[in-house]
Image 1 (cartoon, rainbow, N blue to C red):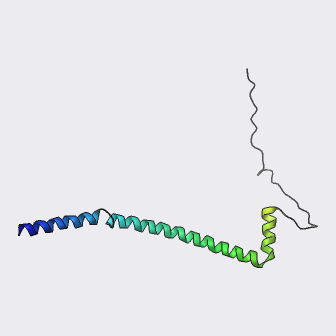
Image 2: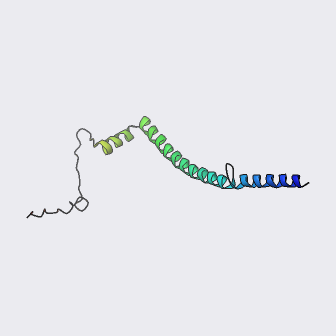
Image 3: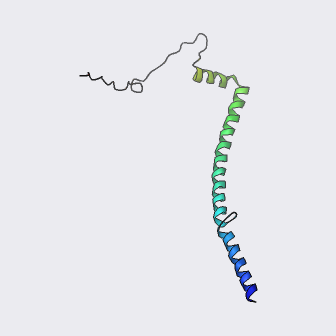
Length: 105
């Protein structure tokens, strides 16, 4: 009878060790659930970005307006016969303070 009781006690200790430590333990499951939540958030952001890119590709395939807009904004292109005016804000383009070199002795 003592042998059976000892064997059951050892079995209980081994099962408890597996429950609290090692693969499939409670802490391991919590860590994996946290990783799943983080990856789900990342995937949602990437899905939104992909949707925006799909819309942009569709616009580029179907309309000349989006191609013209992209050419004007990214490449600085203008139509033939147009006059291009660049308005510069003085405050935004103020040069950095110039440091005068000190004479060496």
